[in-house]
View 1 (spheres, rainbow over the protein chains, first blue to last red):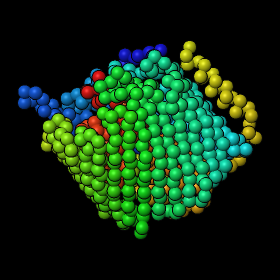
View 2: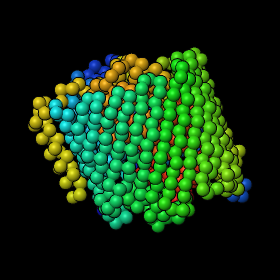
View 3: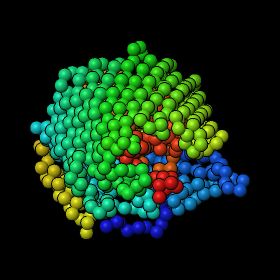
View 4: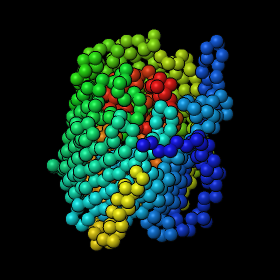
Length: 443
Length: 156
């Protein structure tokens, strides 16, 4: 049922248009924007790193990446918009790609036409877009609509071809997908919905068919309850559940606690990634996971934030058994939020030694004038060796300069010592060009 | 043939919605497509300027304060509607992490911004063995149905 496999590498298909559009960016100006609000963002990355080979030789890698997004809104004065996002890579030295991508690669992330109605959050999308709606979290080649009626009852629907890629042979997979959501909302009080998704595809012999439910309920001004659950009809079991209570009494305190659970058999039945597919050396298909979690974010004074999180994870499978993860962090922002310093520590304790580790991180980013200077250091200490090592360390130093209101340049130097690489240095140059003809903010 | 049925169903529903006209659509103003003012750097806190309930999204602005709590649970809110997200975030923002076959990790792309949340910091290749054993469902959300060619070096 898989879609036709293309013989043209993705990089060769998408790189030329991405580069061509990038070269046209300087033409974007107010003079050309009479019939629309235009904005575009181009980020170019040049990485440099080496890898040791057997026999004392080295491969040298210098991949050049271009990430481009462009948006045209308010087309002809109507609530119509066109959106585009894609990236491409060309290797300036040895091939850095894996899985047959060679010295070129790329992807069309999204390209779609959107109609956004002025009322009721009604909208339609047509093309390739990222969709989060009920049980669906997909990239889709197709159409989507959503509308809310005056009664607060709404409906959404979508259909098309899922944009998925087999990890086994790097080819597009997945047949067709459709689904939708029916929901009710009442301003400031509740929103709940029921959703459905069906995808035809090579999912361990069965199609993918999910029924979902979601709830947001404000039981008192600072207290809200959220819930989401998905039932897998193909395996006849609950795939995943998540329930949480959250208290947000103001702008400086936020606390949440909850429970989530999933079943390997019912959640991973639709996986395309082989690590999730049974039989697998790391997945016991009968296993179930139940997690209790809590998260706190507290800002006692402006700029100073404390973060605490904890979770208890329980597996039915005794080979994994139980684990606890606790994390504490502090960050301080000053200078109007331009300068930030942060420290954090995390610990994972478990029934089994190979699952235990500690993690410490410190960072700062200062932005005096047109410069930005950052340092980020992270170290992890494993209770049991991984490939002969019990620790990993990475530090990233970055220096940036805002050359113009729309152009930022920066360079990163990364040092890594870990079970997978020893005393590794990598460099990265980054150029970001942001152009727009409309006021307002987008991040 | 497999594509026709869902396309027809969705197209038909869209046509019905259009034919029903504006009277079938709530008159509550939609979230504006773009935030009218430039946003400050750092984590967004809508309550600095807004009060009460968000237009269109119909939830309190407090729910969208970008605290650690919200960041961990952002998917819960996004699954009920992306309109409010899209007012401040570029349409491609989600795909910084929810990518299909991206080769650059989010923390590499944002190496100059250590203050931002980015999964897989450090040489995550080593640590993912532990996190993957303990909570593979957290990996599945982004990697289960999408390709990451680097995975194939080991996961064949």
